[in-house]
Length: 341
Image 1: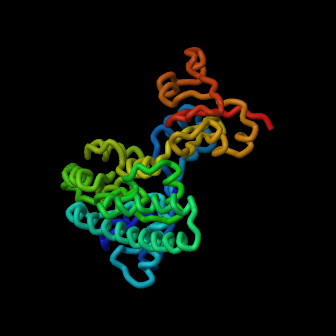
Image 2: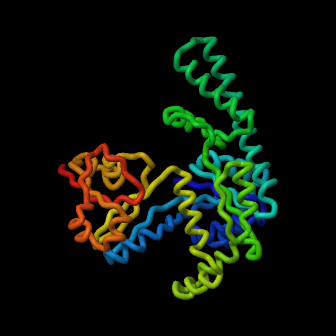
Image 3: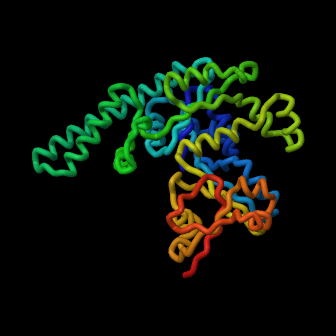
């Protein structure tokens, strides 16, 4: 899971990247025209609850790879770095000061759409040349798909919002269209207007984008506190949970992923899985041997376990189920794979 994070100068993206990945701001500022990778754990409170129940030796969250790109205003070689990073991203996170968000996001989206339209026109020209040499059903199919892309882009509709079939979306990934990746917006607001959701509402209404409003300075302050002090500070500020926790889950959901869990006294782990995947695919996510020798999956839900308090209680209630390989895994399922190889 790769997320590109960028914005205009001084929008707060460097500080936000530091908070997400612990890559120091000094490291970034030493090489401002380069891309900087970092890993961030998906902050899922359910994992902490499960860890409290099982007291495991290890707690392993799902992880997201963030790449901080140079300021979007950069030109020259840095511009190539930016475009490469955007093409390789599964999700794009644009960081903007709340006061200038609408104008900046509108301009950014326009640039992405123009870049995709140039790619579309280039591909249509190449298809026409190929058809003159030798027409084929495959070329005709590709032509219809690319023309469909052009029709939406000319209406300034990002390709991420187009209801492509799974097959069409898979075919389009080869082109690395910039607007095919979901775009989320992090609105960096001052502490005084943090609770004002009007900008976020306008962004959603105008651009149909997922937004999260935060104050990078405040999040930095929260991250430096000890756990007890953090809880007291957040309660005093009326903050239910750090914005960074919500942001990682927003990115996760934008990618079309859910989490399932494996539990035990050795390890409690969250596993990322594409929404709609089967128990067999979940088994393969854990280890290929589990998929190869799959017999069945023992399943309980997080909600049932959290409410019941123990596996023993769920067994008594008949809430531990056996599922076959075609079972579609839900977010929050806790799985134990039975297999034989």
